[in-house]
Length: 215
Image (cartoon, rainbow, N blue to C red; front, top):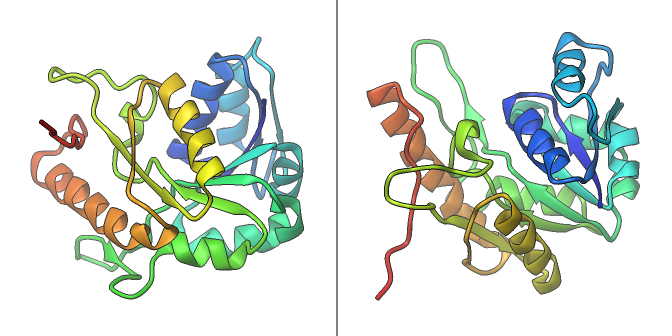
């Protein structure tokens, strides 16, 4: 499968490498395809079917697209990528709408009656957006290895077939998926990410994740 990655931060590079290791063709998109981040990633994925390009080139390339940008640059990145390049495609939204202020812990910039996931769906009205990967740190996004067994990945989106596709991708990366409903479920998953972040800030370790216990 051809995968486009929008964003060259830790999340985009980790997911992109994980999918490349599984044999997918991956093009990572950036404002500057010749940046050091991109060069380093291409070197680490040498021998895989990987390439780099602009946001628009990555979006057009991918049969599936992963959105992995910082929140304050997300809308502009999608404009640069061209909403038409996402039409009909499954888009995994891995963003969290974090607001950073001097000398304060991060907080959500969106909440209660809206979410980043819903905004992404509005910005890409012809795409099939599925929220995923936002409730865990990048070090455990691929093949999570924790003492109590694999954690769960919560997902949401309006398109059932798209969620099934994302569930299959998550399974290949070592994740059981739990579908919590429509894209408005991102209103709950993004605050859940804040619990992950708050514990990270208190413990200075990213070795934690969530699991739904069922009987």
